Length: 298
Image (cartoon, rainbow, N blue to C red):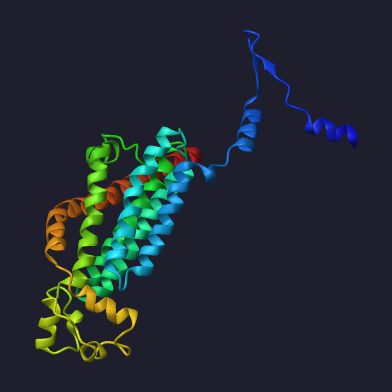
């Protein structure tokens, strides 16, 4: 038993190549690498964890604290660009990090769209459709890449012959950043407008008379009797936040929404293109597999 134990603990013997240079077997290199590296603690992945924490915190503040929510959500989105830079700088690009990054993007955007569905119930089906297209297109694209391109193929490696538009989107870092950033800016602007624009959110002023509603919108001081119509406790955190929030100026959110809307529309179009191209790629693979199976039977 002692001899066996010592043999297990002994270092792997080196193998000399044709030049007489010691060479460690590939399996031994992999085992040594696994012993010294922890993928979960790579810097890009740590940034990814921070993004998740910030996103969850923004969701906590989302119902009543738009300024705090926007700050946390925006930082989380901006860190999306930093983790990619960190991965290249420290040579720590991993499959886990790529999936973590994508899942965080999809979940955080979807949560914001869920809130917008409740804030703008008339447009709920539009936001629900955007969530569905976003998830479906990315899932189909990832699955098609793994099934047809192999496990070593990145989902960002889109051949021009398959789609020059997706190739431009994924290979040009500027295009990718602008599309993703302004897509989020548009939804953040809508979120702010749900607090500041009675034109889009008339329920902000529900239960309050026209005169008092106009006073709130113009930034006048709100007395406790008005707040009592909205909240059980007029001095609660929610009541005070409502009084403060309704003094927000909707001009900047409207400008941001107007500027970012065209890019957001392009991003949704790219999602549809991605879904269609991935579906066709999988169908091509199915046809080849069926032909191969038929030839074997013949």
